[in-house]
Structure formats: structure tokens, C-alpha cells
Image: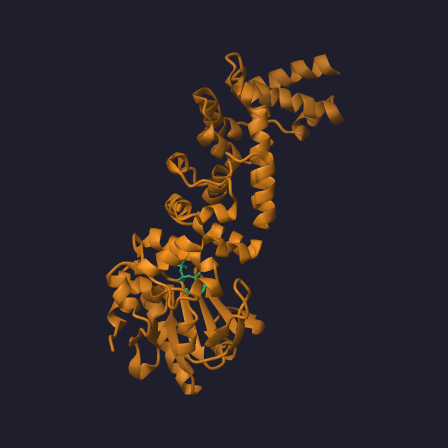
Length: 416
Ligand code: ATP
């Protein structure tokens, strides 16, 4: 049996390796076996950074997690219904789960779960490359358990399901397969690909929430357009919504959005707006409903529809920066960014970018309170004068506090 403790030691921070050894010892003292599983094992073999530790216990994961948390100053979140616990400290987190045996009553349904062995737990997993585990027991620390040939598939760069019924048990694995394939630069194993190509409609049996979770994970990838393109090619993307496309246009726009490189904005939200940019209002609404999108995502898409309807005049020649600001300030910056990327008009694109890079940060120095202290105005007029100062700043008619005060006094005279 291969031992990958050296790979783990070179890939993980020393503190995490010590922690894994401690888990192994503590579990053994309780008469339980413990194993590192899933993505971190795959990535240790591939030498890819991954610090998300998933540990399976043949025993009582929650009680073990509690014991570990008590000896240190760690936070613990327990999920008794699933027999799982999450320990967290500083930037790291560790999931401890009780080994489970899963059976599916019908396609797309959630599985029935019982306690099982590590063998059962690996057999319920999605792909061979994710179905390996590493012993944490002190006398066998680092030994690889690979009952489904994951190491061989890693070598040959293949994403392979564990059994022919896998996609029927859980069709979300179709999207997961494409995500791993594109992230890792692998290929779908022949039979796995055939099953996807011939039965993309299996995704119809999946609830909106679960489809959304998978789409969200795709949008969090470094290059989501690769997975979306592949999903389009295989007829899978159309199962999310018939009008959504993963084509060259999308790839180009995602690339441009990354190039604009504004760390204050959420890229997944920009990607989502771009993905749905070419949909009609009705199509957008049906997509929101089908995928049971959470509030932020539905808001992002509806904001995209609104901005598309309201910016056509932004390409006029005689427009002031304050007009641009007034038009865009009610939209999320992510929406402005996706529209800047998607718009066909270079003039509109440029103006949206000016708003994002400069105009949205321009503010007058004087506050409403300052204006009241200067004397005369109250209520609605305060707002009017403030906006006049703001607009003058945006249009570069004034550029310092003194000029603001002078303008404010002039306005106070004319508006009282
Ligand atoms: P990532 O690198 O994306 O975080 P991961 O492999 O850690 O990858 P998770 O989504 O955190 O992925 O899932 C952890 C593990 O649980 C996976 O490696 C896989 O073994 C298993 N798993 C997750 N989702 C499924 C599923 N739908 N069907 C079967 N096994 C799954």
C-alpha cells in the first residue's frame, strides 16, 4: 500500500500535519479509526495547494470533535442530523464526519444515510480521484486507501464515476465532473462522457437549490467559462436554462472582467450577470425561478435588466460626469462592471469604466451637518445643496473645500 505522508508533509503547513497526527492518536485512544479524505488527498498527490481538511471517522465524529475542541481554543459547529462537526481556528477549518453508507431511493432524491465503514464512505463518492483516503492512525499514518483506482486516474488525468448508476443517483455529479475536468485540465473517461452526452436531461430531476449550488461553485472557479463551454458542448448547460450559452462571447467577456481587476467587486456576481446578460426579461425571471436563486443573485440579475434599459443615452456627446453618476449610482458596481464588459458601444463602455474607476468615489467634503452649521438651511434644501456640491465636484467645477464653501454660500443665498 502506498504511503503519501511525505507528500502531505510537503504540501500542508506543519501545524496541519501535527493536527492530523493528533486526530489519529486521539481517535485511536477512543477505539476509532480516522482518515483524511476527498479533495485534499487528490490535491496532495497532484501537488496542488488545498488546506480544506475533511476527516472521516469510523465512530462518533461529533464527540471526537468536541474532545479536540475542548483541549484548544477552537470554535466548533455541530450538525447532529448529519453526524458532522466543523472545527475552526484562525484561517483554517476542518470537517469531521462519521463514515456513512448511502442509498438512493430514486434519481435526484437525497440519499438515505446510515453509519458505515471507510469503504462504504468512499463508495458513495462522486469520482475515483475524490474517492481515496489516507490513514491517520499512528501506526499506519499516511497509508493510501484507494479502492477505486483514483491514483491511476490521476496519473492518466481522467475523471471517472465509480459505477454506471452514479449520475442517476445524483445528477449534480454531471456538473461536478465538468468542473473538475476543466479545473484540473483532465478529460472525462470515455464511459463517463458517454453517460453525460446521452443523458444530460437527468439534471431535470434535481431541485433548483441543488442546481444553483453547483452553478455557484462553477462561478467560483478560476476560469468558469471553461466549464460552461464544456457544459454547453455536452448539452448540459441547456438543462439549467435553454437560453443560456457557454460560447466564445461569454469566454471573451469573462476574460475582460478579470482584466479590469477590481478586487472590491465580487467576480462570481459579475460572471452571473454576464451569463444571463443576453436573456430576455422573461427568460431571466424563469432562470431565477428554476434555479431558486438566493436574494443576492436574483437582485444582481434584475439590476442587470434595469441597467440595460436605462443606459442607452449614455453614448450622447454632451453628457456630464454628474449625469453619468446620477444614472449609475442606483446600480450595484458589479452590475455596472458586467454591463461595461458586455455593452457593444465603446462610448458606453468607457463611461461605465470612468464611473467605476473614478466617479463613484467622488464626494463633497461638506456634510449636511456642516451646511446646517453654516446657517440657514434645513430639510429638503440640505439635500438639494449637497447634490449641487456633489455634481460640481463630479463636473470639476470645484476642486477644494474653499470652493465648496463658496459655492454652498452662493446656493444658500439663492435657495433660501
Ligand atoms: P474542492 O476542491 O472543489 O473543494 P472537494 O473535493 O473538497 O473539492 P467538496 O465539494 O468539498 O469537494 O466535497 C468533498 C468531497 O465530498 C468530494 O471530494 C467528494 O468525494 C465528496 N462529494 C461531494 N459532493 C458529492 C456528490 N454530489 N456525490 C458524491 N460525492 C460527493
